[in-house]
Image (cartoon, rainbow, N blue to C red; front, side, top):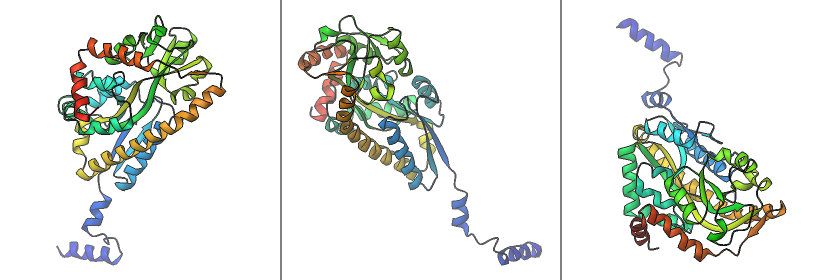
Length: 331
């Protein structure tokens, strides 16, 4: 005992035991890392938004929680990452309600034609009892924790090599879609033939004429250089793409409560900022594409497209669900 006391005294004299208990605990705090994957390129506004989210989370947790962001599907295909998340891996994915609808069918309605048409509509969804019920089911039954879902990529339009003003103009055109039922039924209802294809395969698919066009947001076009293989930007605004930031429920539950709060708060903050920036950029991108030789078709019959889009909800038996959520948000 004397020798131990003597050793402690000697260490204290040398400054080797200067740390008190709280400081020692802080130095030894456990750190957590999320490897976050998305399909978009490094020049997309979303990528910058994710980096901002990561920076703020790290700052507020003093490095205790880190988000490493991987663009262009560097960690793998979206569907594969979602399955890894369900197994409890410390990975995250930017995704949409169409893919989440593979687990909770009702939530897919949020990806349907003209479901949400403004950022105000999207903000109100957080007050929806129905939507919150879907999020709880994703977390408790399927291991998918939605950190936030206010990231809006903008309006989806059809980009083709012929002008499109009505649903009839899409007849016979093979349009690329993600591999999810609501997406495919939406494009079919609007008049085109849906072709499931990965995001990274679209450019060669257009070159090889495996598809006749795509439906994307404006900011995707210059980032993917699609102006090289497409001539018309048809402003159908058929889907306002709401994105969800998803991680493992098991991983989220093991985080300290203050980390959980920071992760969610900064996700929503960055999502709101990024969404607003995207809508500001859309006008600039439109002018840029005109300068690169694309023709913007503005006189689209939106009433005809809205009417046609209802067939997607009917085909998937989601009309009542859509109406219920719209009633809850006053749309």
